[in-house]
Each structure stands twice: as structure tokens, then as C-alpha cells.
Image 1 (cartoon, helix red, strand yellow):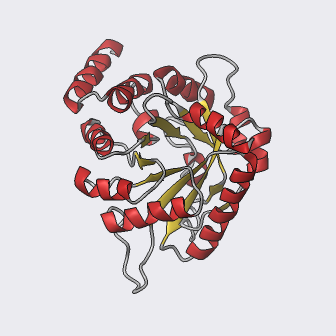
Image 2 (tube, helix red, strand yellow):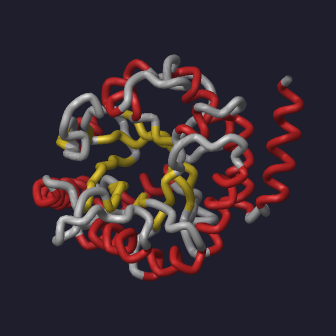
Amino acid sequence: MTDIGKKIRMDRIMNRDTKRTIIIPMDHGLSIGPVQGLQNMPEIINKVAKGGANAVVLHKGIISTGYRGYGEDVGMIMHLSGSSNLGRYGGNKVEVATVCEAIKMGADAVSVHINIGSDTESEQLRYLGRVAGECAEWGMPLLAMMYPRGKDKDGNKLDPYKAENVAHAARIGAELGADIIKTNYTGDPETFKRVVAGCPVPVITAGGEKTDPPEAFFQSVYESITAGGSGVAAGRNVFQDKDPISIIQVLYGIIHEDMTVEKAMKEYQFNLLRIR
């Protein structure tokens, strides 16, 4: 029974026809504070839902305060781990919620953030394995945000975009039971193909910091899709945009309809003129 439960929930956060997804993480309030775009949570959630996002990522406190009761439906992923950049150990992601809490709050999936190479990698991997077991027990999809962030065995800083490191981080998530992997885009389709080929579950790319204009962001999403990626999890490039609804509509075209970057930029620029 749990297998069908997970399949049903996966359909709520991924497009069942394209097998791709647009996820909007909005968990930044815990890590970096109430940044631009995340002050009015019901409003921004409504905008990304209206634009056509498949799911949003929220911490448990925002699920209740951000619940709208109106507008378009959108998949809801509850984030289970976190840390603050105010402290010395921002890379140490710890448990802040449980799978059972997520079930009670109506989540369609849960997510955890794991930093490979951090000083607490072993504890974070133990945590990932335990959460994956709970998700398997309850039929809950697990999105694992897997990043090479820290140092290698020789004490050298890991390159977070090196294909070898990204592929290893992604594979670790799959090895321990994640259903979807979010990780860094390696910078070009050929190297990202190695990441996708080495990971037996869908791989989506992180949106990264805000880029303006968004052409480079669109390009990275387009290239990741052509390399076999399954979508994007973009936060600041969406909720800090001048028109979040429009940028998601453009992302929908790229991810679910194979729109080119050139056409995407034309649509985006046209929409900006429309809202002025």
C-alpha cells in the first residue's frame, strides 16, 4: 500500500506526463532571514501556484501561516532540516521536523539538506538514511538536497560545481533512499550528463542566487533538461523576480514544453513590458 501512496504523492509534485518538475523552495527564512520576496508568504505562494509551479518547499511554521485557502493548488514539500547563517556552523543541517509531522500537516513530500564534505557529514548521512527509512514506511516521497560543501579527505575545499563531486553527492542521496535529488548544475550539458547517468532517480538543479536579467538562469535550466535533468528547484530567481508569475510560466515552457532560451527571453521581456 505504501508504494501506491508514494506514487500518488509523487504525481502531486511532478508533472506525470513530462516526468519533470518546477519546485520553488521558500525555506530561506530559517537560513538567511526574511529576505525580499518572502515577507508576505500567502501572497508569494499564490503567485507561484498561479504561474504553474508543481510544488513549494516550506518549513512547518510557514505551512500554517502561509496557507491560503484560495487560488490555484500547488504541491507542498515540508522541509525537515535546517541551520542559520548567523551561527558558526551553518553547514551543519540538523533535524527540525519529522515525517510524522509532515503527514499530519498534509505534506505531499518532505525534503532534507545534506552537505557532503562538511565537518558533520557522518551525522547528516545517518540522518538522511533514517528519514529515507521513515519515508519508505509511510509512502512519503523524499527530496534530498545534496551539495558538495566542505573539504575533501586531504583538507582541500571541495569544488561545488565539479562534475565528479556533484555526481558523487547525487549518488549518495540515491544510495540512501531519496526519490528526487536536488544539486548544483555543473556548468555545461556534457558534464551534467555524467551526474544524471550516475544517479538512478530524477535529478533537478538548484536555481542559485538571483541573476538579472535571467538569461543565464534560463540557459542553465535549458541545458540541464537537454542533459537529462528532471527540472529545477529555484527560489530567489523566482520569488525575488519583478514578476514571479511570469518567470514560472516561462520556466514551464522550458521544462515541460522544451521551449528554447531565445523564445523564453522574448516571452519574459514581453511580460515585463506588459506589467509596467
